[in-house]
Image 1 (cartoon, rainbow, N blue to C red):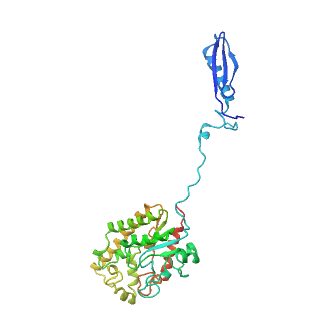
Image 2: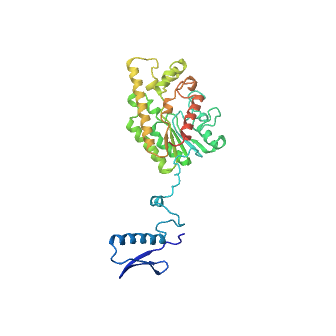
Image 3: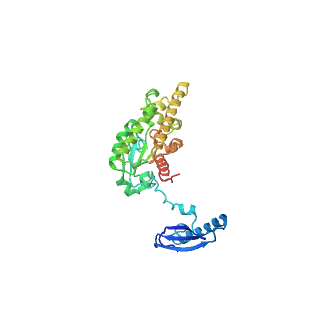
Length: 338
């Protein structure tokens, strides 16, 4: 076995008619005469062979240079191999302990309970309604959700309003912030008044920056903007819904609901393209933040049917629609990191 590491010198001296080899150990402070080679008349090749064998034997005595601390032989590659490092702590926590919501009328539960009114208790993000089973309730449980979730969304809000909402949310110190915004940027009096895509990007980046300056480790779930054209195609089959639309609900898409001429078609296609561009922005900005998750277009792709639409305006989500949004969000938040 090998104890402490030792340093060994090999001394070769010519002491005619022999070559004598001495071994000196720093650890023990001694010199030992190991042996002698034959006459100098021996061939140089034989001398070199004996010297190599003797040196190997000496190094074997030193031990530590060729063996582990317990005397076990180890290979050069194995000896240099580092111990496996522990697995890194995942950045995303699938079970946050508090939730704050920012966004627009969808997150406020608008028209889900009564006509033209907010109903935050059925909000997909933070509501306490048992039928909806909001994201906060699914993550925290009903009792904790009542005290550890906050809704800062506002009906009619556009992306430009998000930085201020983020500041309010940051004051609560949540571990997760949900974002659903962008529909009102497309739902304008005309397509010319829709928020330009570049402005939309800047505003969303400002909102994320506002949160990050206050809460650098808070997670963010970003929902895609719903498919407004599909909502139009579903709601236009209801006479009551079309009458409510005339009160000013998303006129760029829902105005003249029965018109199918080229101008109306172009108008709706323009709005639809803008929604798709907004979703691209949400995805790209979110992707730059390690603690941000975009829903991958899940809300945009969801096929809202008449059961998922408010029976007051046939545009906003009903309680059932709110529950579907909560399901989508919960899957995204709790999914394992890929």
